[in-house]
Length: 139
View 1 (cartoon, rainbow, N blue to C red):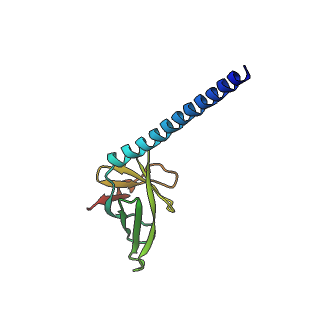
View 2 (cartoon, rainbow, N blue to C red):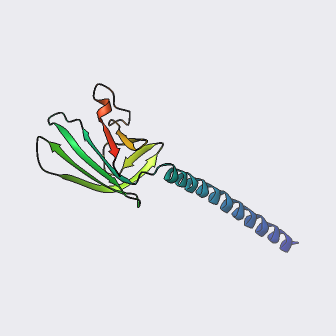
């Protein structure tokens, strides 16, 4: 009798373990499928360029290179103020149609063949210069 009870307990525990494993795999598969969909939805790899507005210079000449391995290289120069070229490198990811660059304050709304810089709170730019915060895909 005792052996039967032990067998039932072992069977019940094994069933619970199997059920939990399946649920966990399903959740992981969902996360992976979302990432795969975003990867296919956005062909973001490439070079983006633009002259962004600047408060105390002519423009901020900006080049952003997004690599297939999810790394980026951002180069910018303050035109009319300095010839110094600034460079930042890091990793990028996509979240809800927004490009996020690690170690950067600004994010970018993904549009067809261009990126639109968002303000520091993650909202679209407004005002007279709103249409100037654009990086166009050049290759």
